[in-house]
Image (cartoon, rainbow, N blue to C red; front, side, top):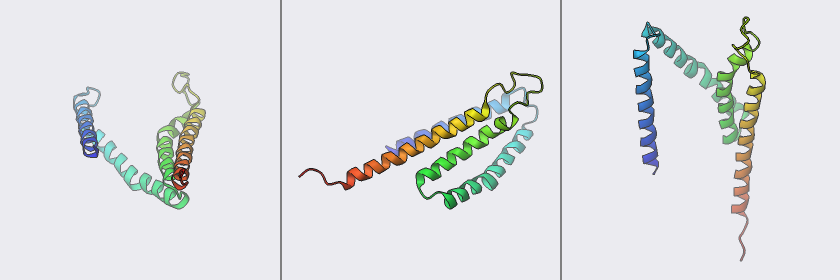
Length: 138
């Protein structure tokens, strides 16, 4: 079963990459694909050279459990995606439809919901451990 899931996930990933490459090469808005290559390499360098080491360092330094480490990774990803909008909120350059949402509130709510899910996972694991340790009826 695990082999089937791995194969399916790999095939889906390859199909998505092929679709993205097709879109990249056939998009009439992209005049120089080398610019996209520079952007992609820059993203890779930032991700693997800066972002991942910082998240791993924070996870190993401040988080003792796997659920907390996983939540730190999710929170870091949410921050990477949401922080630009949070920092630019209110900077609409006279166009009120440019950044119309309460991004800070939504970012904090998303962090709170993901933290609640992580805490629920920790609590569920603790309940399962207790049930396994408790002897059953004779």
